[in-house]
Image (cartoon, rainbow, N blue to C red; front, side, top):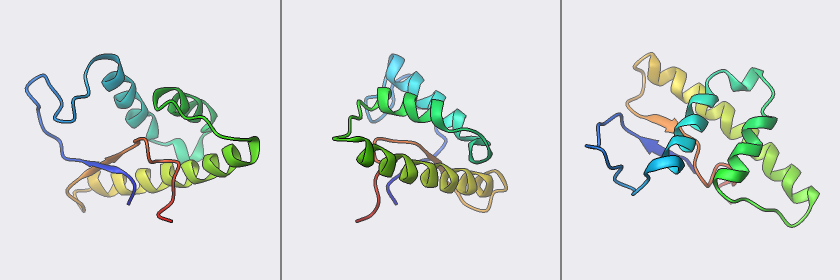
Length: 104
């Protein structure tokens, strides 16, 4: 998968990937926003994603393609995290810089 898998841990004030401050806060907000988003408009989340990860696309067709992939990933993340909340899986998934890409 293209997601960053995250275990719930306390990192002693510093994230092991070096994510600190406002960037970490923005990522946390994106992860929180995933809850229930499959049934809601994802446009705002998409805009925030592009800002946080400095995403730019060559044309409107490419952006539409990436947005469609992003929407699918959001639904996959939500479904996985629902299973996590039921203790059916041991890790929590979140949005990362690869959430607009496929495995290809």
